[in-house]
Image: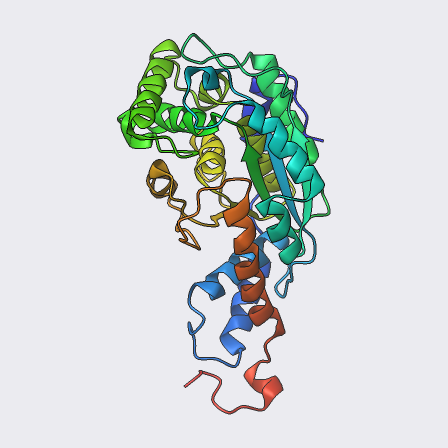
Length: 338
């Protein structure tokens, strides 16, 4: 495990990120040029296949062992009334995940993914970040390590999702801390708050930024994030060290991932954006990261749901790339496509 006992240990790890296998990617590109289709006819599916092949070091890969991990955490800032639901719902939804009754369970099953649920000290919410840091350094490290240790080294694709009443407010605060801008532009309706609730969220984010002036990325995560955001960041980082491709989910997952990118530019090269959610700041955040979403379906559920749905799209890309015949194999004339 890449477990560290300090945030400096994680900063050091972010300086040692592995690259994809460029030889496998070149071989995959060569194969793509010989497949029984006009060049570029599968559009973005072709680039996805090459991206995946490079990270897996296999020019003709398939997805056999995708993993979906849902991390749950509770937030002290929820006491400010920033959610349409009470904090108890976090624990109730964790029970639903474990019983197989949530949307994410159905999607993981539909696309052949193993699903794991990790509840992170739900009986001990983070501190209200309008009054100071949400977490201590030790609490942040513990959550990062929990995320790392949740990743199955045998997985060949990773999706991380979350559950945590109040966490769209935390994600908005993290995004504002990392990228600046008016907090009102990062705050969204989350679980469905009304206009007054939206204004309250923006005010709470503004107060959080004022109470926690540091802008170093891991400090932003510590001061304005939450345990499930830190765990998602830890899992995404662990996947990079193992060269496991990642599909990012919605606003909260993307905010957690953005911490890594701001700390080490290029840290998310192994990740694609599964979808753009209906949450106000998500598209803006994806633009900051240079990530073009695969799907746009108006989803705002969290749980890893949009990213898990995108597993099917990536499986389709690889089925075509790895399963199609070449012109020579098919006995079709005109290898340039035509």
